[in-house]
Length: 205
Image 1: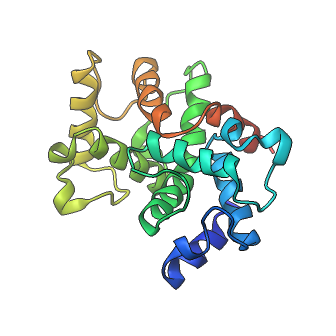
Image 2: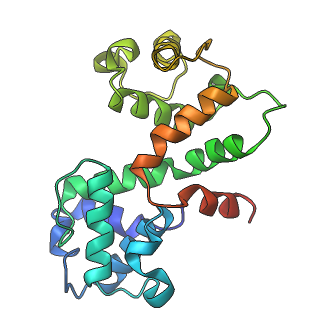
């Protein structure tokens, strides 16, 4: 996506907390952080209607960083961004285009069949990461394959068990209405409010 490039460059230099902290003069890096947080759905915490991406790491940005960290089960008061937290921000942000597509499927009537196996490597990777975080690493054989973006038997097995554990019959590939609804329900906690609605607007631009 168009933002996050500055954060990625700063992260590659070393300790990003030297640039991203409350009161930092690094306006460009902070602006990029604010844009990322906005696209991740933290508009309310950023007080976007008042400040937008102003490059000021003030209380609103502190609140947005802390809110993202809490949703993603990472300990942070929001006063600065560590390398690990920046990596998590970038990961969630990198997955957004494919999450937007899943959201658009969620909002559709599903008369046209959709399959996980026919998605992009990034969309499959995103689902593998999600399933691993939800406790299906064994079925994914995650220690061996990780999130490789390939739809194989391990990914299929993990999706089948995930669905079955929630009372849904699935072949591990077809995105049925119950399965899509469940995926969105599990994805929502990692993002801010209305992230999906923002994605629909992005997809139609």
